[in-house]
Length: 197
Ligand SMILES: [Zn+2]
Image 1 (cartoon, protein in one colour):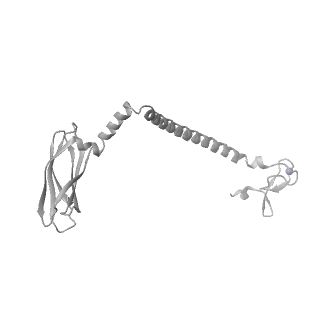
Image 2 (image 1 turned 180 degrees about the vertical axis):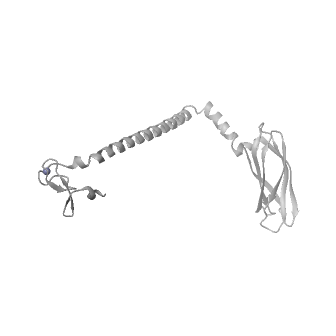
Image 3 (image 1 turned 90 degrees about the horizontal axis):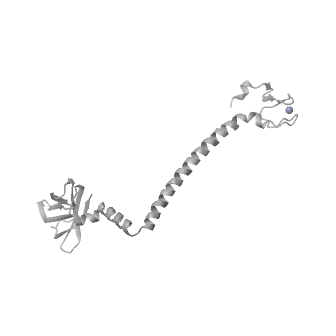
């Protein structure tokens, strides 16, 4: 604050004039030492209005956020209520819809044929095969994943291949390049996962 520059000086103490008794009193006195007048409201008037504005804003924001969160709660309650009230037909159909977009349901909507382990030389292997989309719709993305095993059944590597925009009924000739953490040839391979949506 730089109030001192506009304040009448008495020595070095900032001072003001009491509006009731006209005594020169310390500027920051909350009541007049001479007449005892309560001076608080006079110099707090500005702050009072600032506080009013702030309060209005806070109440507005608080009211909005309260209303918004109430709306969220209401919709949440509505959703959970619907789920709770209709566990039979609606939930099962929703479950089916949800499974459509999950990877697990993709297993029933494709076929994989002609899988072969291919020795690429230099210790590199891949698995080739044909993935056919039988979902009745186009897959935006498909990925097949394999694991390689040695003769003891230990996992020694993995491989995967993926593609985009595979139309219904269209075969995809894939080649899944594999890692191999050993020097030995894989004894077997297994399809470990199919992701599709
Ligand atoms: Zn006074």
